Length: 222
Image (cartoon, rainbow, N blue to C red; front, side):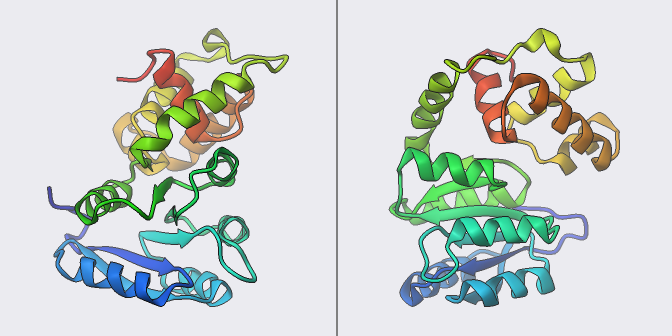
């Protein structure tokens, strides 16, 4: 499967990771792919944030545990600065708290570093296309985290949503980004953002990924 962007250029990627050998390995992996292009890489989180905001790559691959500014803080700062590309955490940690914290702070995916190279390329393609990506071994963990959350006073209620909000929830369940949802439903990206904000509040969920996992559990997705 080959990526096609609006102007048929390769999807641009950037790596922020403090392990030089890993950065080199990912770079060499991407050199073999015509539709994925590495446009920047650094082991310094501060430099990485500045570089991402300057280059505006389609996707940032972000390490979770780094000295100084950790991945979660870097993620928050990118989102606060209105970086609109995809951010995928790339880490050795399969701890529930880390996964949930990353997704709640605006990550578009969470991949483990022990994955096979071909699987990684496939997941990066999906992420660059605007889809949510999560290592297969973590999906059950996420679902369990959501089930535990259901003990909260307010549990999600699909009947509280408008028809349009339900349509958008269906698309979230398919892992689509706001941009892809807007294109599919023929509405503006800004309108999608407003609807997502409203449906998360109504469902008492804190992130689009939680909404997607919940929707899939409830059979709301495709």
